[in-house]
Length: 142
Image 1 (cartoon, rainbow, N blue to C red):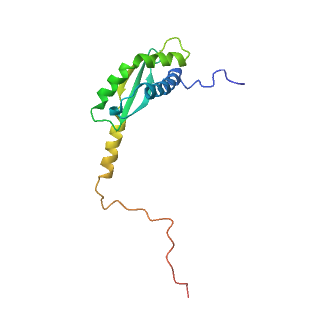
Image 2 (image 1 turned 90 degrees about the vertical axis):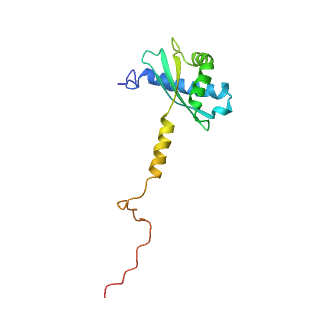
Image 3 (image 1 turned 90 degrees about the horizontal axis):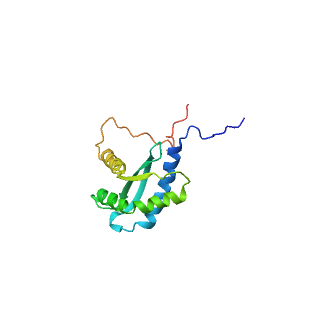
């Protein structure tokens, strides 16, 4: 027996969030031309279960340290056009109202990576032997 809803465990607001992420990313690439912000990435979108709102998390690579606020302001300026793009591409009753949030996760991940690499080695840290190294020569048994 085939099921009527094969993606039953995959909620609709998650699918809409994924689609909004793709549409917003393409729209930002096309509509926002501000090199001082750096490379803009839409990291994730959280759509509300009723699909009336969506939080768009964005980050910038190569921009200045204070680019989070500038990035959100620039995206809010083109938010209406992005909303229209969503309305053109998705067949839903209402398009979610977009709220842009500077995503701090990439910066935190980079900081954690930096801390790990700067940790001093301790005597307990043993390097695993190379499993591809040739075996030592042994004397044959007499």
